[in-house]
Image 1: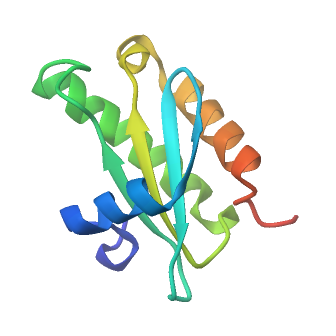
Image 2: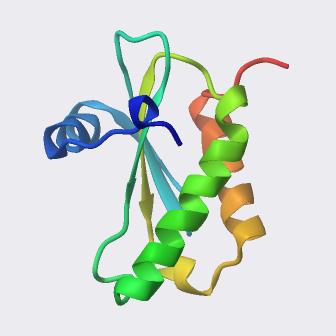
Length: 113
């Protein structure tokens, strides 16, 4: 994912969590807040409670890939933070991808086809 599409500052993550709206799934939590840009930015968060570094990095990679594949379908002008929950440890890519799609659909962030 290109640098301009990523949320990197802690203050951006905090702003989306505090001022944005959130939707939950057993594997993921999606938080979204409008931005003033012509494109959406994404941030990924995995707590130490999920597991060790290897488990956290795997979860982050899978979430990033699921988002990258759907990026063209996601509405522009949003800051989106995706947070992993503990059951993601046992989840495969297809389960994570399905969970992300369900959350985006519930949040109304998918472009009309």
